[in-house]
Length: 354
View 1 (cartoon, rainbow, N blue to C red):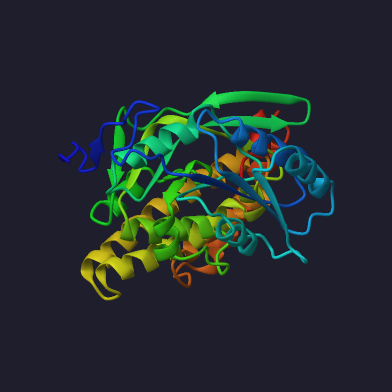
View 2 (cartoon, helix red, strand yellow):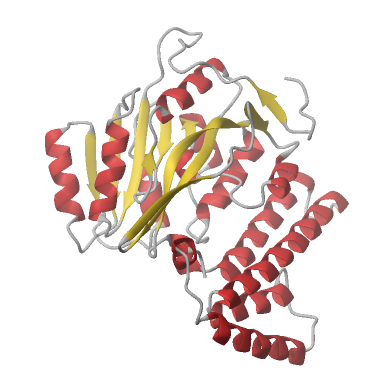
């Protein structure tokens, strides 16, 4: 494949439904982990079952829900034998349940879907067709549509697609890709992978709240990845989003650590190249944290703004700044947030990570 102008390689995307070179279509398993999202997971399962290229199975692992999730999924399983329900005896905290859902699948391809997202039409067909026509590619992912879901209000926002043809990423250009597409380098619910990718990259690491980010980097270090030029899922944005609970400041701190470890694996812990990528990532993260603090001030979220401000000085290690600079900044942010709280918030602001 020839080099892209930005040193990211591109490849043609096969027409949906094109036959694989080997003749026999690969089987697809959909894995969904869920907890206390009865209505949302019902939508996710329905969208998976209704795909133009039907999945072999939809494996749903419940993390000891206390709402009607078990009843809802149980009814779907009784109506369609492809739906397989697993039940955790006790809540695992999330990541271990993700692993259980995927490990219970049997298809040659594994498609992941969060319980609050929904596949768009043709997602599995286009993803599987690309993998069948490009045996060198280990996994594919796609663009997504924001489905803003707040009480009494809902809307859809199409994020611009990042490419007009499939964009290939591997260990040689992984960090350039991450830097260029810092916001949402991938959407986990759009990932469709070959089984060997899961077997060789290993499961999600429960040590991370953002275990999918750590996993994506580990997978991309081993296998070429293709970003397809299409919309794969509706990304539901709502007050219960995982990212809302985690918070922007903590997310940036954890992602910086994940990227640092990936650089160490690729270039060596003491290499100049790895150190430079680490510094470039942290510089960009600090800029994003500054922008996050400003956005939280405008929406009236004082403590979230202060958390982002503090993380600017602690990202990657102990703060070298004087404590009074941090305190002075927090006082200024709180004063600004008090003024911002009086402004009406948009639907997106109400569900954005704080």
